[in-house]
Image 1 (cartoon, rainbow, N blue to C red):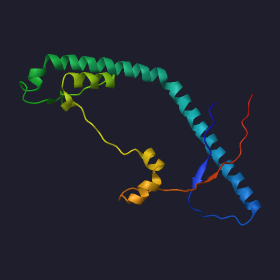
Image 2: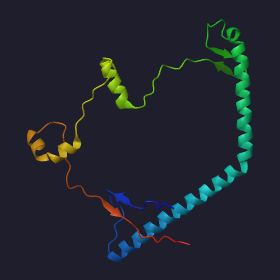
Image 3: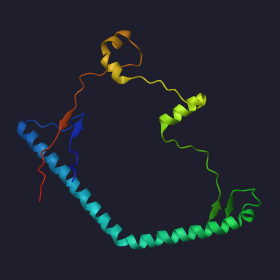
Image 4: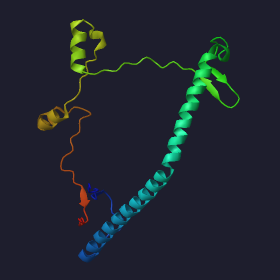
Length: 176
């Protein structure tokens, strides 16, 4: 079982304890509240699982029925397409209880093995099908921070020494 993260990052304080004991108490309350949320989420998921399991057979039967109905409707509509679309003048037919329509999908392409594709396009002099994209290397900027800052390039801002305040209530995992 994977352990859920309980770290909390915080930027603002609204309720401020005044003593060490109050901080200890507030951290305990924070952990208790987080665990209660986890218990409620688990309880909700258990109920959802029970409902889903109880109705699984009905849902599967209904899905099978829908598939059969869709295939039958499509078969009839394909056979009567000319009449339904007024010899191709429309792409939609209103059948009182609903509509059927035919839509052409836009052209698409899928790519697998990008390096081989790029090489083949270059070999066949189809470089107009290749996009060359320049990007700024942020790691290189950080490595050369002093030099880059002296250049004073608009749009480049370095953030150093940022600090997050993190509260992690202790939890013990029960093993059986």
